[in-house]
Image (cartoon, rainbow, N blue to C red; front, side):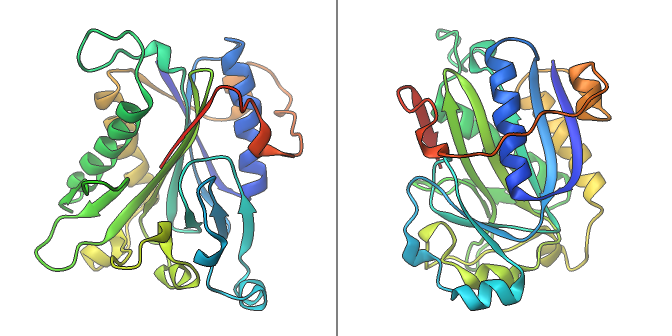
Length: 259
């Protein structure tokens, strides 16, 4: 079973702290698998493989646009998160999911990423947007004769089989923010959104419901919508938040990143 919590808009620093706390609880088997769905306030994040030169906006312009800048321990390069984008953070123990070949008991990092892509491909299809994988690249891309465009980014972190970070699906995202960076370090392909592809905005809740349904299908799991994190944890106090210091050093002896 995967418990899904929809959090609304959350500052990126708080999102990092929530993930850190939930990962610790998952490793201790105090909670089951959890999927967080949320929006972030405008933020540019740099993964472990990021090149600072891919942030092309000046500090002054970022401040003018109200965009924060964060290093984080996910795989991948530079990306943007902001309103109108659904960000998903699966906190999964991969030992609970079997590999597709039926031989390995634990889902591997590469196949986990491929399954995230499949969830997003199916979700876009639910809204009549044909999408595909792009060989040699991670994420989901529009499938059209003209120039293909990236509609969803993926970057994960895995420590002792437990995942964090995840994906960002552009729904009604203001795409002008992507002009502040070279998204994922890829210069030749543009970024798009579901709104741009369809010509009208979408209800985020409808897209979230599609994501939930497709997670259940792709990961062969029952989805349980939980109203709050407190309900998930079975207690009446909030999740303790600690500052996400030295994220790049956390559990580095057994970390895996992918993007």
